[in-house]
Image (tube, rainbow, N blue to C red):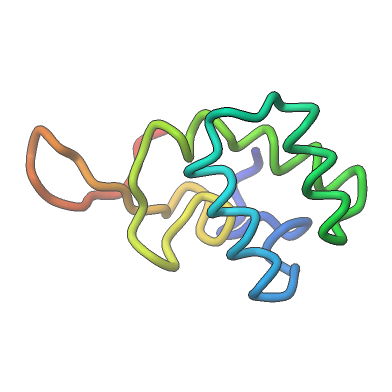
Length: 93
């Protein structure tokens, strides 16, 4: 991803759609990438948007992000919970 503060392709989605995408990225560990992409397209994302969203999948599955400070919304300024420290901190990537 680029160094912008948001992902312009995805952060411009309507709030309810973006919340759905982030929920699926964080919690849907059963569907394949192709199935999840089809699910996103069925909810109104373009093929390009759905493909971009899938690129974030492992990051969302591996971390718990502070609401509103997710990689799609804040990119490199996202804030995740660090279980070793027991607190939220900015992701390092």
